[in-house]
Length: 82
Image (cartoon, rainbow, N blue to C red):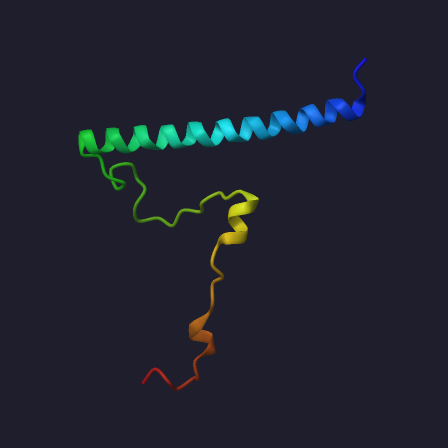
């Protein structure tokens, strides 16, 4: 009989496998999309991807790698832009 702990380990292993497959499938889809866009001369603007700020969803690991935004304008002295 399988124990709760063993089932939890299997679940974790399956989650990791699922994420690996998801990443591989995403890479394939991106390649396919880029190929079709090039083949048909489709641009990001044609798809409505330009002109609006998009918020990209990131995984927790990607969020750690994102560069920090620094408010340079706030750090400058008040009369320095003239």
